[in-house]
Amino acid sequence: MQIGAFKSGISKDAFSELTPITGETVGNGFVRYTAGMFTGFEGAAKAKDLVRERGYGDAFVVAYQDGKRIPLGDAMRQTGAAGVEPASAAITTAPASTTPTPTVVTTPAPATSTTVPAATTVPVTTPPANTDEAILATYPATAEEVLASYTPPVDATAYYNEPGAAPAKQVETVKGLFFTVQVGVYSKPVALDRIFNIEPLNSERTATGKIRYTTGMFLDTDAARTRKDVTVTLGVSDAYVTAYINGKRIPLSEANALLAKFGTSILAQP
Image 1 (cartoon, one colour):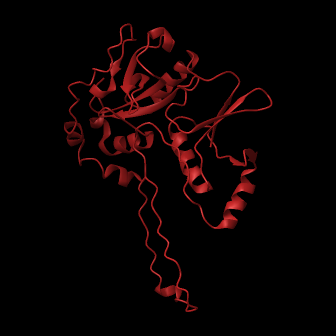
Image 2 (image 1 turned 90 degrees about the vertical axis):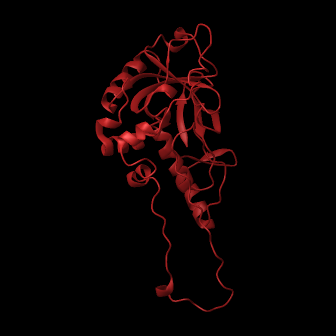
């Protein structure tokens, strides 16, 4: 899916949580960035929703054939004619709660001409795994239990020891739910002027060992969105709202489901 098109060069860290990333220079001097590689529309559409949830709200599905961009409708007609949608290179993001794609097992039809009456066919359905009910089922029954289940690691701040690094609170030490605004991802802790002198800052060490910076700790999305708008004016054009609970980044949909169930008792105490 297309993430965006930009006139000037983009930092290698801008899309560090998405892979694979492809850049294509178009005739008007812009570089068009796409993420993922899928052989069917359904997989790409699901990944598009995930990418939009990560803050890239303008992401949309596009299609290529033999290295050339083609109309999406043409691609869908071609793949539809084949009747299958094999797996291919998928999109991956930084650690966050994601829903695995169900595996569909197809049993070949018998090689006889006998027709099985439709009434004898029993469809097997799997409940959607991304509903609020399914998400909340992975958590303890009460907010108190959710909070009590988390003890910050004793070395939670050890990774943030670079001399001259910007002052930041490590999200790994924060118990409870909060909303914040992503500023950027860097290969190591950086000085404040590298992050447009934005304060206050939070830091998180990603699974790939990079440092993700966010700004602010908010108890609702409205306050976080206000901070996002300010952050954009300070120079971070791709800033977006995200959420954490017990030191772990989660999708906004999951954060909102937790807040709806548990109320303010699930919130962190910044």
